[in-house]
Image (cartoon, rainbow, N blue to C red; front, side):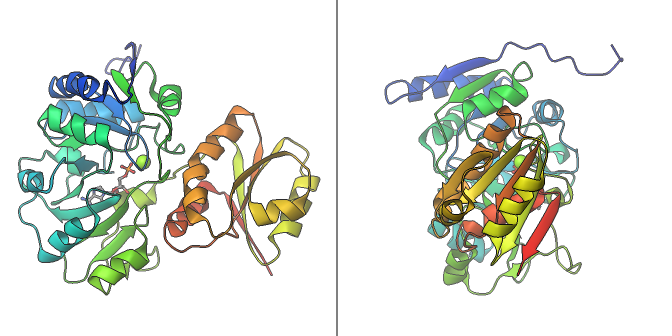
Amino acid sequence: MIPGEPIFSKSTRVLHINQNNTLEVCRFAGEVIRRGELVAFPTETVYGLGADALNQQAVRNIFSAKERPADNPLIVHVSNTDEVKRVAKNTPKIAQVLMDAFWPGPLTLVLPRKNIVPDVTTGGLDTVAVRMPDHLAALELIREAGVPVAAPSANTSGKPSPTTAQHVMDDLGGRIDMIIDGGRVVIGVESTVIDVTGNIPVLLRPGGVGIEELQEIIGRIRVSTPEDVSIPRSPGVKYTHYSPEATVVLVTGDGVAGAIRKLAEEYEGKVGLLLCRETAETVGDMGEKIILGSRNDVESIARNLFYSLRLLDKQHVELIIADGSFSVEGVGLAAMNRLKKASSKLIHTG
Ligand code: AMP
Ligand code: MG
């Protein structure tokens, strides 16, 4: 063994929750968090890997279990809006408006940080990202822990985010203390991240709350794009993300069906297709085919995306051809963003 290398030999307990035992399981898991250990738990977006956000060593253990780069800060989860005061120096008016409109829910606010939050949690930034999840078990767990809970997605860094407890086990089994199994998540992609520390709110990551919904409530929003160097960027956006074992090619434009068929026919290895229903109808029978949903049913596209990428990996597909013909309204923008990051090649058809 290399000195200083972490050894992962934990036995990871999986606790299934149902209508009758959720409170009891969360009370127990809350104690585990308070002791400084790691608990993966379901939220409405994806599974999170939770630790006491104020406990440096516990948070460090999140980074080593996930093999996450140390400068990629974590989202701190709270169980009510008052708890934001424990970690944020102040709450700008616009943040209050957004909390009232979208919490509990898939919206993360970047706020000025209090010093009680250790550097390891915020990646050394003077801001802290905060969210109140819309999930009974997640809220109970945070409440029972009695501390703000730092929780990134409960996957190995760079892999598709986990949407079931089994996905968490596949990546982090033996590395973490406990998994609360609450079944498959509802939204399937992560929260929207918005920075409200400046004069104009900046969208750092599209997610479960659509940009149109945000604009309806607060008006103008700047969108952080890789080209725009004048505005803050989420440190996490620079890392590779959401990549399955297979190579992913994303096909967009008006001629998706023909281009996908041609690519699949020409490829000599095992192919998996991630398709919208409308495209599937014209592509015909080939490869491992998964239908994400109808082009305009962006909720199903998002919900099935990470789940299907992991499913195709289990089927040992070598190339995934993904259909980008779905709408980018609402959570569709987040689904497209994740798919672009998962892809090593983008083909735009005329
Ligand atoms: P994850 O929880 O792994 O889905 O990722 C959390 C996302 O929130 C990453 O993209 C982080 O870079 C971003 N994030 C967390 N804290 C901050 C912060 N203080 N400022 C900007 N972005 C943040
Ligand atoms: Mg993540």
